[in-house]
Image (cartoon, rainbow, N blue to C red; front, top):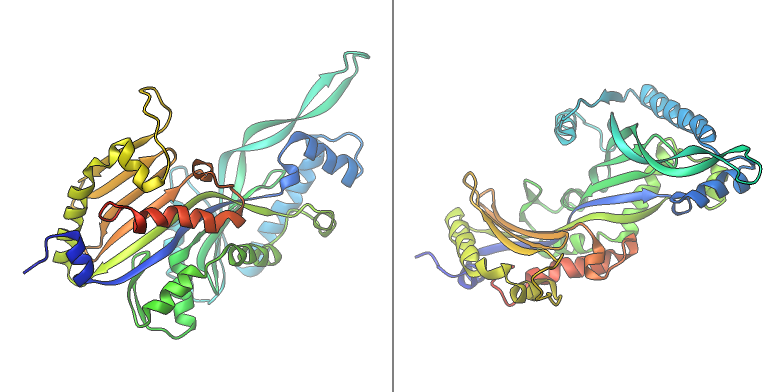
Length: 375
């Protein structure tokens, strides 16, 4: 007889539970070069140019782009021009299947995208009437280079560089791929689930590996590949303090509960939906996000529940401000609960990477500590 309640199924039929980082999408930037005065200081005080302007940025761009393309040519790395609307992850998936090395760059993608930049605006002195250049913030369609690579410890990831000053970048990694690499290195047998683990010979070690994916390790991943790849800033620039830092753009955390039989999973998920349909109410959302909800009719706060039954895999979605919890029946084998935080400030947490532990506690606590059945 199949158990009908969530509590009974969790107690008797969940054979593996794993929680931790799912995906991380991170800003990579030089803190002193994110505002106009910092750009002026870089060129005037550090590089000794009395009239900072966009004309000084162009040679740096040309050098960086030339070094990237030369790096690709020397290593036999394919340079791919992404087409408009093309799914970049699909391009990576196709090429990754043919990539046999333990570590290295799979390919470099190139795409024109609208990007924040700094440019020169010509102004006139109110006293003399003479024109002078002035650095202002703007946006432009510029080339971005997607470096898709495989790391020995982290597995597949990508690092995207804007080719224009101040060369801001994005780092995207996957915590499940990290876990798979670590299990393989330690000789622990496992069976993979799409973006997850289905079976593991040592579940405690698996959870310890997931817990051990720290801000320091992510930072070390970035530093390692900045050394291996062409760098937009010179050694003298970095010695003067113009070094990349990391902040959290989007953080995804997940809990995967693998069921022993597919039919238990279906009953489990349908019961989860029944028990959580009222989560759109402010007092119930507070149980998840530990935030007092305003009772005024007009509010910018977003809190709601959606049950999506499109196709054959239903999902439960709970929204709060810029964040979301999604539960769905993954591959008919597991209940997957994903918490996506798009703005850490929603929880009173800073964006710098060292805030990752606080971010993880805020994301995973609702899943395990709520008075609701699972969410």
